[in-house]
Every structure is written in C-alpha cells, then in structure tokens.
Length: 493
Image (cartoon, rainbow, N blue to C red; front, side, top):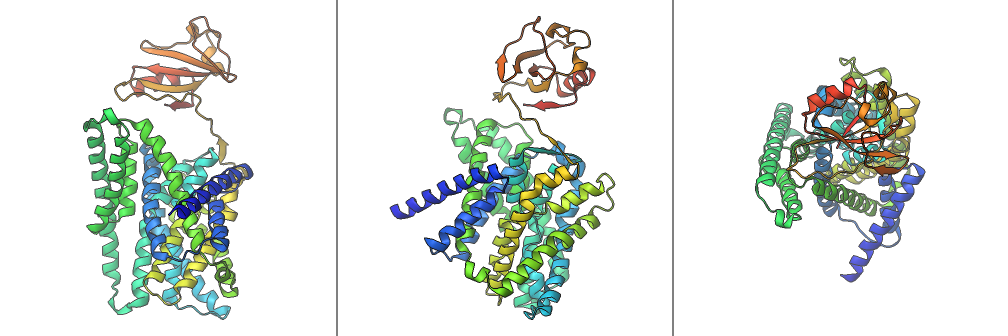
C-alpha cells in the first residue's frame, strides 16, 4: 500500500511540475499530464484496466462538468443559448456523420477496410468537444474573446457530451445487434434522456441551493463542501437511474448553483477549483497509463489516426459549425472559424472509446488507439494555438485581472465592484469629491502601481487607478451611475 501511495504522490508531483512548464511554454497542461501518464506507463507502471479507467472518467467528468457549470453565468450564455444548443446536438451528429463516412472510405482506400457501422461508432466517440480541455485552456489563458465566444465555447463543450454518449451507445448496439436497433426508438430515447436530464438537473440544483442556505452548519463550514459533493454525485447517479442523461444533469446542477446566492460560496468555489484540477490530472494520468505506445505506432493506426485528425480539424468540424450557425448572423465569419478551431478533443472521446472494448466489439482496440492519437493531435495542434488564432483573427482582447479579492459574507446585500478611472470620469475635476457618486455608494480603496490605500475626498485620482466601490443601491441604479460616468468595464465582485 505504501508503494502505491508513493507512486501516486510522484505522479501528482510530476504532473504539477509539467503543468507549470506547460503554462510557461504555452502548451496545454492536459497534454503534459497525458504525457506524464504515458511515460510512467511505459517504464514503471503496468496498467490495463479499461473498466477502472471508465469509472475514473465518470467520476472526474462529474466534477469537471459541475465546476464548469458553476463558473458559468447565465447572463453570459443567455444571448447564445440557441446556437450553443444547436451546436451541442446537431453539430455533434453532423460531425459524427462526416467523420464516419470519411473513415469508411479512407480505410478501404489504404487497405484496412472498416465497415460503415464500425466507422460511425469510431466517429461517434470523438464527435463532441471535450469540456475538460476547453474549460482548462480557455480559463488558463485568461484571454478575453469578442462576440460572446468564450461562453459559447464553454456552453457547447459542457452540454454536447450527452449527444456523443447517446450516439456511441446506439452505434455499439448497431455493431453488436443490428436487428434490435430502431431509429425511431433511439431518437425517442435521446429526447427523453435530454428532457429528464435537464429537468432533474435544474430541480436538484434548486434543491441544493435551498438545502445549503437552510441547513445551518456554519459551526463546521467545511461540511458544506461535503454536502455539495453529495449533491453532485446524486445528480449524476439518480438521473442516470431514471433514464435521464447524468452528464447533462450534473452540468445544469452546477449552472443553477452558480447563478443563485448560496452560503459559504467563496470556500466552495475555492475547493472546487482545486478539486477540478485534481480530477483532470488523475483522469489524464489514468488515460496516459492505459495506452500502449507500440499499438499506437502501428502503421494502420498511425495512418488512420493522422488522416482522421486532419479531416476532423480542417473539414468536418468547420463544416458542422458553419451549417449549424448559418441562421445566426450575430457571428462573423472569423468567429465561426474560431469556433471551428477550438473544437478540442480530450478525455471524453477517449473515455467513450473504452465502451466498444468493454462491450466486446471486434476492432475496439483500434478505435481506442485511433481516438487517442486524434486527441493527442488536437491538444498538440489546436490546444497550443488557441490564443494565437484568436489574435490572428482579431477576436482577442486583454482580459484584466481582478485586483481586489473580496470575500463578502452572504448576509451582506451590498454590491461590490471594481472599476478603472478614465478621462471621462474626471471632467469636473480629478479629486475623488469631484466625481458624481450617489448616496449610499463609497469608494473604499484605490489600487495604483501595485500599492493599495484608503482614499479621502481630496485624494487626487489618476487615469488607470482601480477603485473598489461598495454600494447599497441595486444593480440597475449602479449601472446607470457607471453609464453616466462613461465607465464601460465593470468587474462585479
């Protein structure tokens, strides 16, 4: 047991160091975690359990999807809700169809013929973008994106796994027992799973909000974390048991909790931020340990994997995105190109690729190795160029980091916000008392050149100063004040 703990500690330590190196050199940390797992699997650890990897993946995805939903503000995704849902459903189906037919045709052309049902199964496993990869890379880069692209990409990646999961399960049935599969029943099953998953995810989320706010365990505040973890796994498992989609349910549960006031929010968010990183590290390490590099480098796998990866990145994904977003003129051509490019593959396709092996599908190992290779290519090529492509297309802007880290008790109903001093604010004078600030609103601290101080009425302001503002006025009145002062960027704390 001690040896197991020692190896686990070494794996985590090396993964964290690799993550730091990845950030310094602009590479996705998840790619390095995968590499660390492959290195240990090659030299030190003999790990071949697809079943255990699938369980680890299920648990990790619950945490990752919940945390992603909790960090997403509904006000941000509301304007892009319809196109996001279309991408997460129709977009996944189109991607699977295009890639499936390409695999069928290409495999026959290079002499490693794969049947059409098996080709569609392979395509279904990798049809969705990966929430762990998208959330991790977009949030680590701390880069702003125009045209609501960041919430769009996060909504799509957080909600498109159910479609890929359903397609994978259906295609496994088609390959094993084609006579028992009905297209009509499969469509009906998908609709029921989505509706039940969405309804239960929302209901369990509201129940979690009510319970956390009313259970009153402030004498031992750490138990709020345990309570919320219980709701996360309950949301997934209960929904799955009653024929709903657990992955969708856990994402929506997180979305509900992220958009309602809950007790002890700061501690909960801090815990889940660290726990999500742990889940991602363990998941990618386990996947890396599982892969057999010798099988990965077999000519048929290498040729097919590279061809499928290129087709997916440069043809299938862009075609699916442009078709799905054709009715929505709010997205420019450059925005659609960027959405196409950030179709990252990661842990989810690899986890889905374990289903054919566990179910005994002939050729399941080939599917797993091809999906793994495609994931490596996606993370290495697309993951490392997320920022560069955004800059090249003129869609990026510098996202200012919040300077004031304020933990506000839930009993305080005041609004805390951070603003930056502009020329328009000082048209009547540069002293703080010259600024038209309404009653019940105070500037309680100023940040200037890395230093912080409490202002007075005669404090001279300078362009670029960051102000911490507290107000008892409601958000609409506060926004009107900011509009009057010509302040466009407001960070709510």
